[in-house]
Amino acid sequence: MAETIENGPKIPFPRKRVTKAVAREELALLEAAYPDAVTELTYDSPFTLLIAVVLSAQCTDARVNLTTPHLFAKYPTPAALGSAAQDDVEAIVKSCGFFRTKAKNIIAAAAAIATQHDGEVPRDRDALEALPGVGRKTASVVMSVVFEDAAFAVDTHVFRVSKRLGLTLGTTPLAVERDVVKLVAEDKLRHAHHWLILHGRAICKAQSPQCSRCPVATICPSAPIVRRVSAKRHAKKKRSVVKVVSLGTQMRARINR
Ligand code: SF4
Image 1: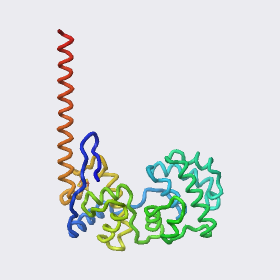
Image 2 (image 1 turned 45 degrees about the vertical axis):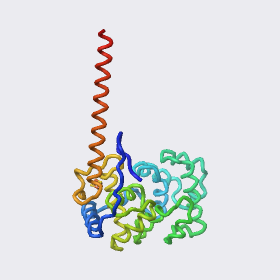
Image 3 (image 1 turned 60 degrees about the vertical axis):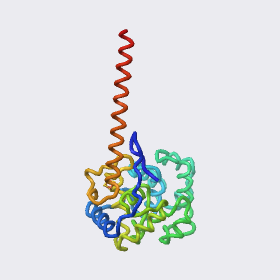
Image 4 (image 1 turned 120 degrees about the horizontal axis):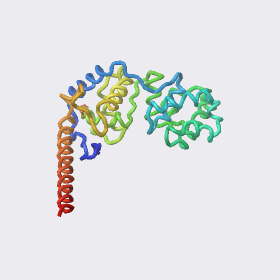
């Protein structure tokens, strides 16, 4: 599996894992780079975080943070949201994308919390994952952020950055989680998700990783891969420019005949 670089060839993931010592050093550097890493979603209770995380699938945290104040002003409790009209919730969450499915899921999840869990978000993973729209990643975020449990959520950024750092060769979020969990002390596990997610958003971007300003660049196995891909991309761009200039010259020559 590989990420694509803008207008150019793919960036393959490393084929070998780094040693445990290098992996731990990479993680320590990220911890130092993002010492106060916390979720960027706005929430004031387990319930509001759970709903925000469900809404954040395929959507930015900033967009969700603009949406949830309206949602919770109108439906502040699981019981209120659980009995809301689908059309009304759809209208509120429309800008978060996949709004029909998300509206349906958050109404059903809120209803389940209200009726099956006395209005409280369950702390147990199995009970969380039994809620509509809640998968392993959402459950892990809720467990680690609000309950401060040792859970590690793997989203698209965490998946990509873990693989680029050579922490794992896993090809599924669960496989990546299992490998990374072995490298992080239990008391730091709930923070590790944030180190990787913030790094993925700010520097190790999917299409254009900025290795030149990355604190891990000297030991990251993807840094030379990114350099090679960037060189290929620039060469390709140069060839395209030469082709366009040459076509332009030929056109002018024909016109001036
Ligand atoms: S060196 Fe480059 S590929 Fe490696 S983590 Fe940093 S930005 Fe990502």
